[in-house]
Length: 136
Image 1 (tube, helix red, strand yellow):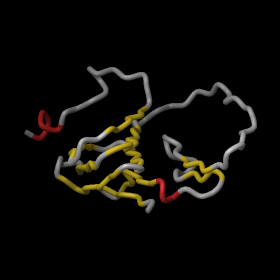
Image 2 (cartoon, rainbow, N blue to C red):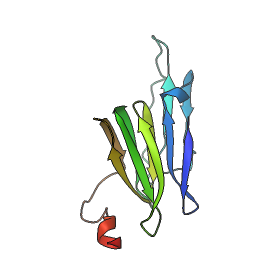
Image 3 (cartoon, rainbow, N blue to C red):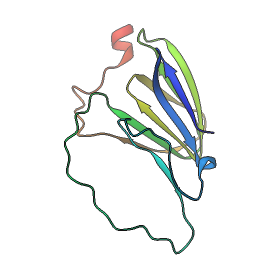
Image 4 (cartoon, rainbow, N blue to C red):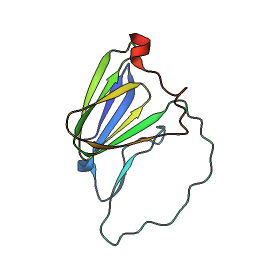
């Protein structure tokens, strides 16, 4: 089920679902992507090797965002640089959509519960541009 979506010649979204799970850890993202996404399937009794991540400095040049759909059905819509609809991505319970930059929105078709994850910190004044204010 995993699929990449391209707008203006660049990968702007990636979707995977519970159907992509395999025993162990499977990373759906490339090491170079600004957000890493994997899916884990473990039997009862499994434990991971304890670890920590080293402090590192990363330069974020594009904000990535992930939506996890727990319940319902929704579409993620991607727009090109001119603000025109470029892709519609259907999501249902058990799907994860990672968006890497670009313009996007959602359309909810059924009552839904969705978790949104994105890089922070977030500054509502400087971090977002509304397409209707730019393209009318």
